[in-house]
Length: 237
Length: 383
Image (cartoon, rainbow over all chains, first blue to last red):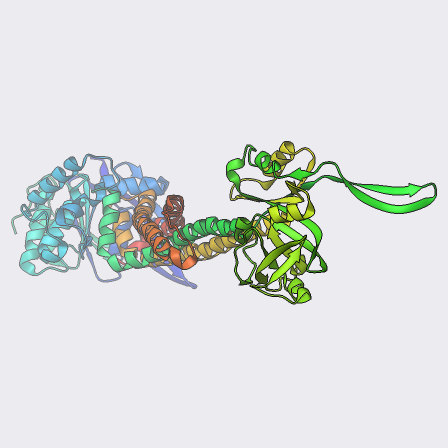
């Protein structure tokens, strides 16, 4: 099967005033469509840098990144923006909802520039909010939502364009364990619906839900384990 | 949810910043509209006052210098008038095409005649026109002039050793001194001023006129046109505009206008800078938010558009509010500036609203460009 994500010799070096920091040192790996990959590693191992490169937010200093057939280094700025909107769904640790918008409006934000009738946008947002268990809370502001509910809104926002790939950066990092489990259940169900999930985390217990795990250290993949077939049903945890 | 609504919602969230951003435009436009409105009304008022101040056209007989001599003997020269002016010429002047621009036509007759044994120049004009033709005269005694009465210039009064209420004789007739002019520094200080009919009788020149003074209302009409039309009506007359008066009127009004525009330009510039600074500061504050928007797929153009709409809303509202306030201020303070009949000047208000909106959007361009140019990498560092 053609990999949906393909990395070849990807390096990322940050330099400032003669100081060079290598965040990623020649990473190569493929992720196939429908995989649920958990990337672990200590702080500074390069996890978040890898995620931002995969999300088209940063361009690596070396190497090639191809996602969904698109060579990211060949895309212009607007092309990268379109790529982020259509191919990638980002979920951040701190939700990053816009505090002055309701849950429904936050979900609709990525569609703001699109010329889609408002009712269609609202309908799609409401459906997504219902699918993440927030029916009836569409008009609440982020300040009126719990952490878990805010993260659900963020996930719904990431799904508004129905992207094939979901990138999550410590999505349960700010949640208590029970709420974190609910969010992980949500990711599992999205994976079961065919989404390719790539999650960066410190939490090794999440690995049990994934089909594959990789561990980074000093910008290199030091462990890459296939846990089960991507087509297999998610493991009950 | 679209960009416009997103911009509006953000403004509502950052009300105090929006108010501060709009304050510069509001003050600028209010000042601009108020000053423009007051200036334009003052132009009219000043012009009106200047027009009331006196005549600006003089009509006199055309004359020619004739040299007198016999053989090699030169006897000097004399001025010969081609024709004489009469009271009937007043009707001809009043019938020109721009007759509606003429406020007054005052005939004057000058003659030298005896007054209580002293040879003095008599100046005749219609008694009823004294106040309008010479509004700057300060008269001790009665300011009105009727048949059989005279006003004396300060020097003439001193020469005749007489004053208000006393009499003088001229041409076997008794005239009552109605009043004495305070010194003006002009020729009338040595004159006897009487009703023109009395002077015509004294000079034995019934209906004669030495010159006419014409006061034209020239707020928006060229004096030159009126001069030309009077010249056509009276071919034998020399018609000349008192250019100095006209030029000084124009200069006074132009100065007012320049002052108004200068002050407005400075206030508007400050308003524009306030927009630039506050929106630029807003971009700095919102790096994280811009990062989120870039991460969810906003193009540079969309970020630019968002910032532009935000400033557009603020500029529009503050411009309209500023224009309304400017009109109100101009209307309410008109009496302070000597405007007797204040009116609402809509043109400066419309111009001000458009200028405010344009200025706000212009001031938003650099920060919006900066926000749009913010690289996702830079933005996500704060995520």
